[in-house]
Structure formats: C-alpha cells, structure tokens
Length: 266
Image (tube, rainbow, N blue to C red):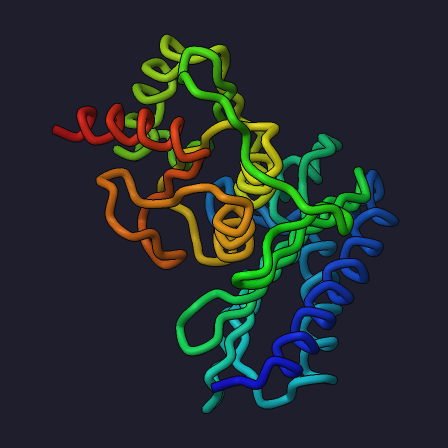
C-alpha cells in the first residue's frame, strides 16, 4: 500500500512533468524539422521524443524504481507497484500540421489501478488533473461532466483508426453516420486524451473510440471518472485502459450511447 504523502508527491511530479514537456511542445510549435513514420501513416516527430525525454528524466530523478510505459520508448519494467503511463504528444498529426489540438498525457497506476492523471494542452494553457477519490480539475478549478439529458441535444466526439482498410475504420464510419443522425453534431479532433478531458468538463457530452493504446486513455479516463462521468467498452463491460474500446459520457448520454453501440454490434 502506497502512503498518502507519496501519492501526493507522485501527483506533484506528474503535474511538473506535464508542464515542462508542454513548454517544449509550445516552443517547438510550427518549427518541426523532421517527421518520421512508425508505420505507413503513423508519424513521430523529434518533439515527441524530446517531450518524452523530459518526462522520463523527471520521473527517474524522483522515483528511480518505478516502472514506465511510454509511447515512444515502450515499457521499462521494474519490481514496483507503481507504473507511469506516458503519451508525450497525443495528437502528433495535428501538431505536425499546425492544428492546435494536442496535449501531454501522463497517468500513474498503483497496484493495477490508475490513481493520478494529468493532461496538459500547451497551446490553450489548460491543465486537467485528477487524483482518485478527490475529483477532477481544470487549472485548479473543479470540473464536472455535462448535464445534457438527451442525445439529440448532445455534442459527441470520436476518433478513427489510421488503417483505412481496417474493419474498425469501417465500423467507425457507420457509427459516425449513426450518431450524426441522433445528436446535434459529432467531432473528430484527433486527440483522445483531450477528447476525454472535454467530456470531463462538459464541452462534449460523450465519446467513443476503438483501437487505442493505454497511453491514449489512462489519464483522461481517470479525469472523466472523477468528474462524474461513466466509462465502459462498447458492450457495457468494465473499462480498462488496456482494453480495445472506450465509451465515456455523462451518466445519461452514456446509457443512450451504450444502447446504440450494443445494438450496432448485434
């Protein structure tokens, strides 16, 4: 069992690392010199790597025995009950194209449970944070999910697989069409971590996406939960950051979206 004062120290380092990495991203905006491809269209920039380096060094300086799972460098596992889950630049495609929708996402898992999360949007200077059982915050002010009661009055968001020939991509197209006919509008902004934070503070009423990674979801999912939102997979099963799907929303919209997604799969 981790002592409370240590969890608070972890939270402080998580926030400091997010802000430091965000500063580098902000200063590099519009100045990308090199773009590499991890797959056919999955890109990574020198800024992703620089941001991750800052975060990892900050963790190592304070908690040298903790495990780290980071998007660019993978898993560095140690004999610790604590694991940091890092996306140094969620929304790299947006960043590389000059579209101001990207963030740093850092979560901390203790004994398999996510207990601390921070998501920082450096261009808007918005820091979303949460600690288990203590609520969710935007720049220090407590936030909560929307009170929208009907899907037809809601603003939803989603993301698509990069692989245009993939079954998941085809399913998302159909789901996008379905929800577009049921709500006011659907957005596809390209940063799952920010999408979740926008659900948490009520800008979006619901979010769904498949084929994501733990670093995309870990921090944002805690922030949604602590803001009073609901989370599951498309079938209503308990949400896991290591799972294949996520559905998130305020308690009412979540249930309406879950019914649509469940019926879609039948």
